[in-house]
View (cartoon, rainbow, N blue to C red):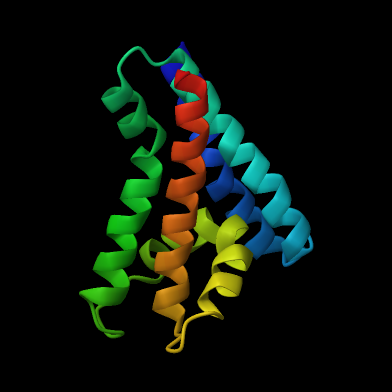
Length: 139
């Protein structure tokens, strides 16, 4: 039962990203960032609290994140535009949408900014927030 709850909690950013993209009415980016920062920290905390093994908890909590990262690398780093699958390429972008605002602000500190840099920074931000919540839950 805990694994089902965990899975539901970790897919929610992707659901939000998909719905926000389809409706074109997302939260104001700063508000979405704050809400999902707190939410993702809380999800990390909950999974850290309920998982007996730290390794299994981290893998479970970041499973959708890791799948999205692999899909992004496959579709945008290893594949050219001709070989890219539109629907598959959209999945990682939906999943990280709530954290793009923070990553774009961090990318502004770098000298060379492109879309891939922002996406990779977004994945890193999500991981840091989740692991922070996870560690709080383990204490």
